Image 1 (cartoon, helix red, strand yellow):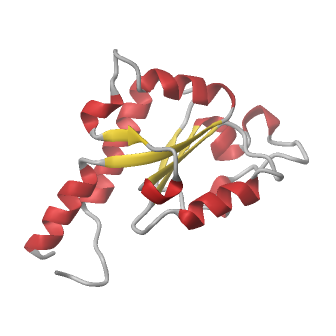
Image 2 (cartoon, rainbow, N blue to C red):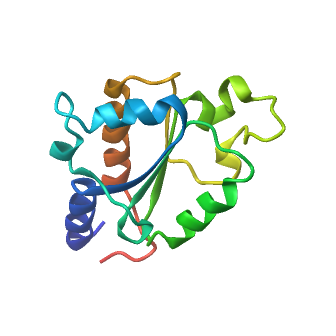
Image 3 (cartoon, one colour):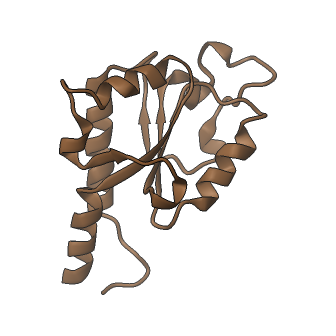
Length: 147
């Protein structure tokens, strides 16, 4: 990896702008991660309101078949490079609604999930651990081009 690429990855690692889709109880716990005791901003994890300004999509809670096209549209609007985090059992495997006709059971079938954060709902400490794991992935990222 070239020296300029290392600088790019360092900047991306320390400025993770995310788009959150708070569905269900995992979304409530995610709001706690941004509050004073944990303060996601000090880790460079800053929420944005538009997908065009984000690097990471955070999926939390259940995803219905009707809402799936909206998620796909948001994902397509995000600029490259982009990453995806699935939070909670509902987003990862459907959770207690796994056998429902309208709930997506496996988000990895529809999106390239980079970090899975299990739990129902996961604690804010687990969000922090997942963020650190994602930052390590971003730091190690390799492109087809090497600067």
